[in-house]
Length: 333
Ligand SMILES: NC(=O)c1ccc[n+]([C@@H]2O[C@H](COP(=O)([O-])OP(=O)(O)OC[C@H]3O[C@@H](n4cnc5c(N)ncnc54)[C@H](OP(=O)(O)O)[C@@H]3O)[C@@H](O)[C@H]2O)c1
Image (cartoon, rainbow, N blue to C red; front, side):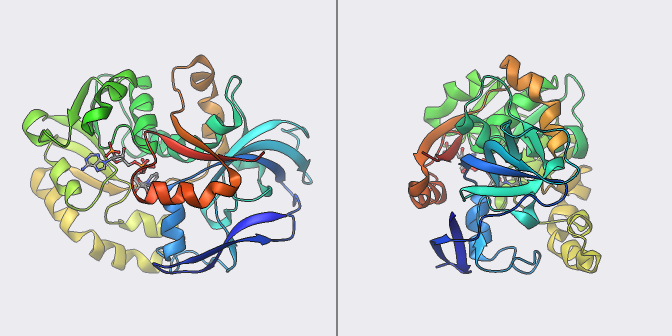
């Protein structure tokens, strides 16, 4: 079958369309006929080699994090799906491969596609939806009325994070560029700050939770809007020791501790909490949010749907920050 594979890491990573053996549904797995796949900044990070020391990928590696499609075959012991079901999934980080005609993954990571969504809409959801769910129900659980600040409110992640936070009863502030102010309001944001013309730290304060989607200097800067006792989660900044545990590499804890020393020191000074979030695949959490997706309480935001063979163009747009608002998705003919 045709697959988009990574053959060497680096700034000038090499990728190619290749003919690879079609996967089989192993025990406990669902074989999915890929109809659409979502693009994420993580695809470029993996190709650059950012995860090479942490995850034991073998090259050539079929890229692609998330998928929507049809169940083609079921492995031994899978009873909660039927062949032909429309399904979607965030594949486990250690076993990606959505940029292909077919992919097999554990049934636990798969969920039935919500009624009313197209394959393209469903394919762009799992990674960002699960990130938002895990941010706001696990790392920093939202209580109704909490004030939540989300950076980059019309990005792939931000657009869903705003809606999940509102769904959980938060008051939400967000940053966007000038042309996207109205869109962020339509996603439910209560306070929309134009990051090109305004300084958010002069406008908002006393927040309970920050979701930092930008990293670099923005992590420490956005920490300042928290009330004492508040929580900042970054999805791009310095990793913390919990990330080493999550990867099953406890020996890396001292490294992660060292890498996040500046952020932890700043948090301590302000009396707030700092953590790094790396989302995980979870089919049950996708199922839990099906009612919200079917009722339209949470709506996917898809910027562009490209044919599968224009996947590279899509990845380029994403890398240049020209892909939004929302997600880029590729669709099989
Ligand atoms: N750790 C995890 O589990 C995890 C999960 C999901 C995502 N992530 C990471 O989160 C980041 C965002 O992902 P994404 O899918 O949302 O990317 P994206 O779709 O490319 O969105 C990035 C957003 O950032 C906005 N932005 C750029 N500069 C900004 C600034 N100075 N202030 C405020 N907003 C700014 C952009 O807005 P404009 O276009 O309007 O400029 C855009 O909406 C990526 O680095 C991704 O790798 C991590």
